[in-house]
Every structure is written in structure tokens, then in C-alpha cells.
Image 1 (cartoon, rainbow, N blue to C red):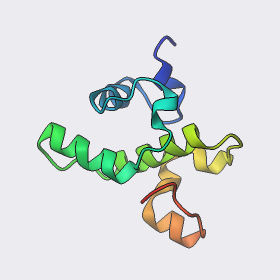
Image 2: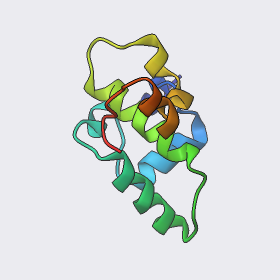
Image 3: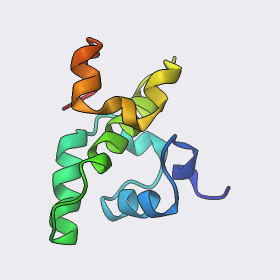
Image 4: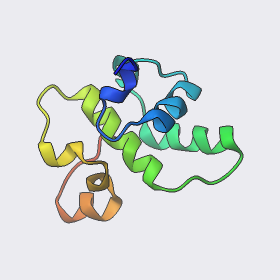
Length: 95
């Protein structure tokens, strides 16, 4: 795998391109990013409301880049849904 972004759980070729469209080219570029802001910027870039799953993937990606010790469950993007976070007392990296 030659794309450095695809080492992030949940990031395939299409999402890697979305990240590049936001100016993110390597994992460390995600440190300090706000997933909600990233999601809104990408919606504006595409001139449409994107599926909210994109936000969940961004939350997971920022967590992956930010934390050194990963909870395996939090490396699954679907566990970054609003309901999962509130039901499990998880403090999202950023809403």
C-alpha cells in the first residue's frame, strides 16, 4: 500500500482522496484537526450534504492520528456514531 493515508482504519482510496481534497496528505496532518469542521468543509467542496458516515470516519481518523494507544473498538469508524459515543460515555476527539 503506497498511500500513507490508507493505513488509517476505514480509509480506502476514495476517503484518502477526500482527505487530500482537504489538504491532508499524511497521518500526522490529522493531529489537531476538528472532524466536524473537516466534514463541513468536504460538504462545501462537493457542494452537497454528504452521508454522516463520513463524519464518523473523520472522527476515527483523528483518533487514530492523535492517540498512541488505541482502543480496538474505537478503530472501527461505526463506533464513532453519536449514539454509540453517548451510550458508552466516550468523549469524542471532537464532535
